[in-house]
Image (cartoon, rainbow, N blue to C red; front, side, top):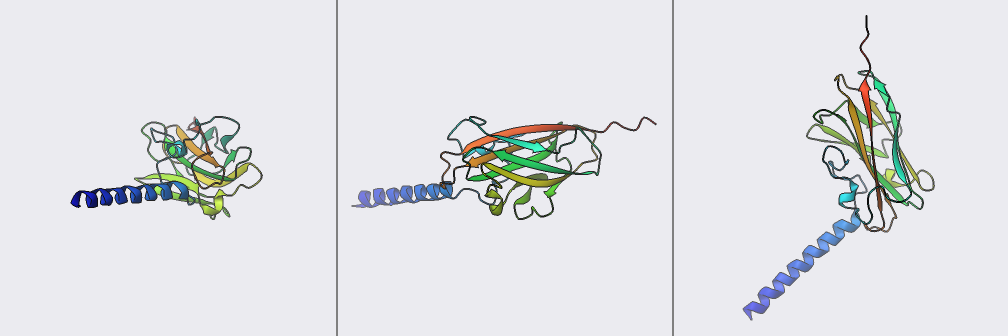
Length: 195
């Protein structure tokens, strides 16, 4: 009798744990993935949870527009992150801007005016992670999601790398059938005035 009760208790715990796992897996991260999933500097990307297909496979892509070839310290640069994939029902992303040498935070990131309902910023150990908010998961047009932010360039003298990972979701509430896209863009400080 005692052995049966122990097995039953263990079975109930296993079922409860499975239920918690399934609930977490289905609910996803509508308010943005936890910090640390940009795909840069050894971090995982969205593919850590949305692994139904290989990253960057099939039609679709993620882009970062507005990154200058050369930046000036303190200058504000409007950036646009665009995720496109046919039949995408929901979209999400995570982006960082870090110095190429060492990976420290490079500059500041903030939602562009009017996009603060769609874009949020989290700080983890001094690194800023920009992600979509719940309102930002809706495509802005068929098969396309766009997010706008502002990057204020740092005073450092090294190259800066932007990493972004994005998930094109099918909207079924699970990780199955979703597609992850990643990219990176680099910029360097403006040449010093030769005077």
